[in-house]
Picture 1 (tube, one colour):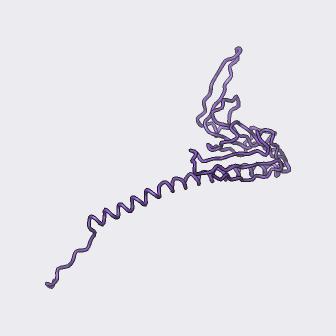
Picture 2: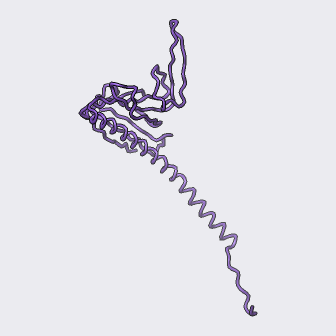
Picture 3: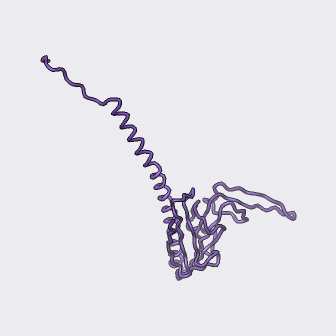
Length: 194
């Protein structure tokens, strides 16, 4: 190696590294809450799309089969004598009570469950699933799509039947979304604005 000028060492000083880390920390502090809200919004959108898919499926099956198709919703933390379909029995609590010399079993579940079945054979479940984010109605309800695509809303507490889905856990910044099913069988999406 020829002798000459010594090479100048290149690198970062400790001060430069600390400033870079501080800037990265500030950006992370801003981005993490936004990302958490993004994830909750995406989950809400997924739940709404799933519910629209289930209701549309039930209506199309009613038209295709020319028979009544029921969509039943079982609410959480409500004791009932009717058991849910098998794939909705997670966290099932069975309470056995004896009244008047006869023993009966009542069931309680955590989370909402929905299933689609023909009205003539309710044991034949066409589709089943669970949601945790339905906020209204608060009690169990059902819809029946008829052979021409119309809906019978007798099992629903309101006409049109409004199903409100909100983020879980409920975030103040994210508005719930309401699906409205009317007697013609149409499914409409209504967004609330905060």
